[in-house]
Length: 324
Ligand code: UT7
Image 1 (cartoon, protein in one colour):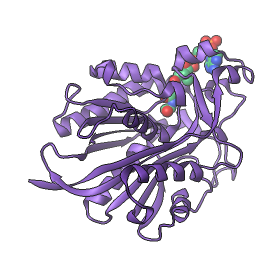
Image 2 (image 1 turned 120 degrees about the vertical axis):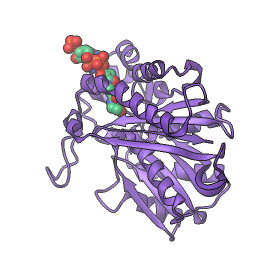
Image 3 (image 1 turned 90 degrees about the horizontal axis):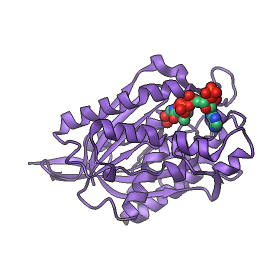
């Protein structure tokens, strides 16, 4: 039996040129390379240049994903951009990227689920493609978290970085059993936790942009349970398991959270894609950045089964299974 699925046609990513090491940060706040590596696994992160905006990062990632897919901007009729650091309050940064790519058809909008944003965006684009409403989507995660960090707060400023990643999805009729595409996705939110990770500004409250505030230990305490729950949902819905997946590409917040989640799910360490050491936490960009790394270095091959997972502010948390 054949079904319509959203199949990944291409992937691309973009990192700003400026690299900031732990040693660089240790010269600005009371921290050390040893503390950051031991507690998070992060060694370096990229930071956007002055004037370089989320739309610039997202557009470059989108162009690289289109090139990887062998497609032109005009082939795209949907852009879903996951970001918590838009260029402006409105219009959506997706609209800016759409205009810069010269696309005049279809729709483009932003979606905000903080670090879970890419999986929420993938799921949203997938739902629209499967109904036949659109044919090909750019799903982008792009962030400039450096702009909302309190650079005097050592508890948060060492954790985050800037970057963008994108995938091109296409609605294709595939075999229901074993066919390629997004097999299942699971989205969760529990707003009771919203004060554990938030930005203390916004248009309707302070009329300022604000800075990221986090109770790191509290986020950590909830992370592994939420991540593993929503992955169990994906396994139950698809009949897949830790044994049948080829790659686990989690949100890259903290090496300890990634390792503990993989261990709890009994996912073999060799299947885990980790980029947090080089990228830091790039929020909604972290998963497509990691996908691009693992695709380009030859790990993710056609027909591989890839498990995605994220957890972040809200709290939001989400999983997806994709046959590449
Ligand atoms: O994307 C999703 C959202 N974010 C996350 O997933 C992050 C989740 N949380 C975490 O990753 C961890 O909680 C952190 C990496 C943020 C912190 O690690 P931790 O092991 O939970 O440390 P902690 O917050 O309990 O702090 C331990 C100590 C404290 O000192 P005292 O009170 O024990 O004297 C902190 O003041 O480490 C101190 N500390 C630092 N020391 C050096 C906090 N930040 C730093 C720092 N450098 N940058």
